[in-house]
Image (tube, rainbow, N blue to C red; front, side):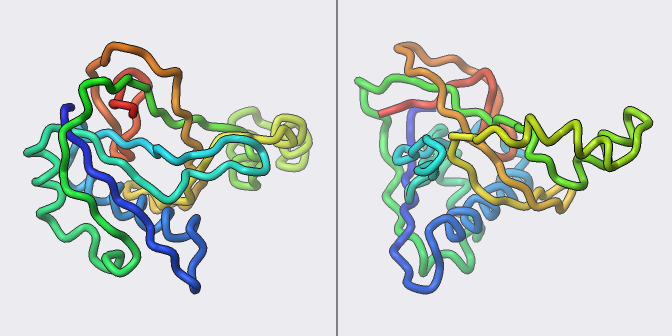
Amino acid sequence: MDHYLDIRLRPDPDFPPAMLMGALYSKLHRALYDLSADDIGVSFPDHKTGVRTRTPGDRLRLHAQQSRLEQLMAIPWLTGMRDHVTLDPVQAVPVEAQYRIVRRRQFNTGSLSRAKRYAQRHSIGVEEAQRLMETPAARQIALPFVQVSSRSSGQRFALFIEHGQAQPKPITGRFNHYGLSSEATVPWF
């Protein structure tokens, strides 16, 4: 994982950045799924955390070997987004880069569908399940998120993203089809 590529959102008067990032990230997810890619990671260098300021930012960074990034960019996965983004060229990771794990975090957001599944698993009524889930759902989540649609299930959901602590050495591993991993690091600079 010695190269990266930045994709930046252009300002758009018709679409908020969060909507554009969700569309971009959903397209990336579909491309990674179609390629069966487990060697491409992502990060959000301009992300902000905090209940009122959480945002992934306007830049999506892809991390992989140079040939793999070129292979990804050779397929037309950005169709429909080209007017909304600028692409930087594939570049080598700076020597002084640190490393971070960028992973998905899941939270109980108290949705009706989640309450129904909980009720079914625990043989209780949906109303009781919703009541039990109110307290955890009331906590405020400070992590940035992107609204995406799953390629496998078709479900639309908020994908919360946590950037772990910076560390001096990389850890190799596999990435999921969202470019996230609970074990592997991506360069951070």
